[in-house]
Image: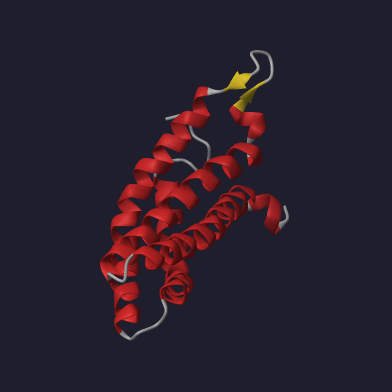
Amino acid sequence: MSFFRKHKKWINYNKELGIAEISAFVFGPLLAFIASIFSQNNFTIVAFSTVGDYIGYTLAYGAASFFDNRKIYWDEKKKKVNRIFFNHFGKFIIGAVFVDIIYYAARSVLNYYLLSLNVVPHLSAVFTQVIMLVLYFTLMNVMGKTLGIIDKKKR
């Protein structure tokens, strides 16, 4: 059995997370830049950046996961989304909240620190996201395996 077949679920899950992170990589700095136009308060800029990240990656993960697993998530006969998609997406959101407590706390502290060094807001958000990417993927994989999202379990 080839490596890719053996680890297909993990590869697909990480691909979905990668797509989600790319979306966060766009939305976070974009909202940080928009916030910096209206406010020079570092806390406000960090908050907008964090909200942009969360909205961007949550929506992108849901879309990527659905299209990657449409044979499991789509009922051809009824022409509707199967309940298992909502179950997994709900687990993802709940699990991501716990991951986010760690991820965003560390990310926000680093982002605030970079802003205090007078790094421009959108670059601060970009540097922070790149540095925190390893932590994000590690925590999300532990969460995905623990909650049965990777294996598409119905529990």
